[in-house]
Image 1 (tube, rainbow, N blue to C red):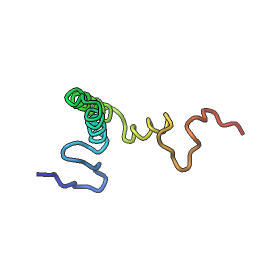
Image 2 (tube, rainbow, N blue to C red; image 1 turned 180 degrees about the vertical axis):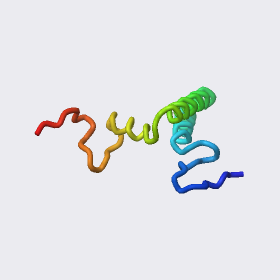
Image 3 (cartoon, rainbow, N blue to C red; image 1 turned 120 degrees about the vertical axis):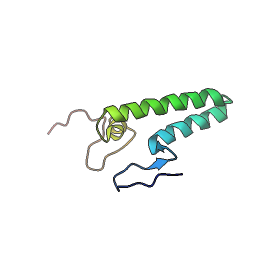
Length: 89
């Protein structure tokens, strides 16, 4: 049985994982299928999901978006690119 979200601000879930944890597990599952190392990559995906859950619980809200922006994987609309470390002028 799937739990229905009570508030509009609740994060999206897939089964009992949040979406970013489910993406990490499914990416590891895909790599495991492609490399014929399915059981190993399922273990790696489970560990990665556990680490993501601990980081999100310990940090503030939106820490994953900040991480993705800082490393250049995500672009914020009104901010300069993350590779620009100093703005002159």
